[in-house]
Amino acid sequence: MSNDNQVTVSASLLRNVIREMKELRDGNKCDHSVGLCWCEHDRIVKQLEEAVASNKEQLRDRNKQAVERLAHYWGTYNKQPGYENYSTETFLNDGLYGLGIAIDSRKYSFANGFAQFKRDLLKYLNGGTNYFKD
Image (cartoon, rainbow, N blue to C red; front, side, top):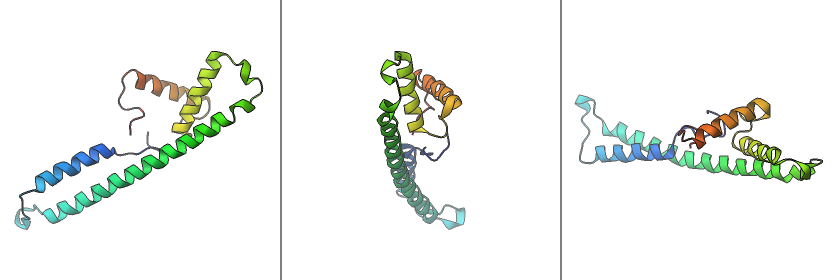
């Protein structure tokens, strides 16, 4: 699921890498003769820390956009003629569709996108760990 709405690197994974790299750094000195340079290590840690901050920002932006899309979707729902007579199945499918397009409007739009969202959601509900994970 690589798209504009997804944070592609887990912030918790980056935090773990940073912690482990800092632990590795403690008590060691640069030794350029054997290719072990902590100057480079520190630069990498700094880049990883910046990536964590960037991921947090991306996650906030993505969630804000998803909530706005979902609010717009439900805000216009009562403008559909006859919505009050919809079956429970239609109402549930409409709700699921709204969630799908809120999460990823490109991937989960229209009939094929909705079918993909239901497959992904089912895998997620059955314990899949690679679906809808930040």
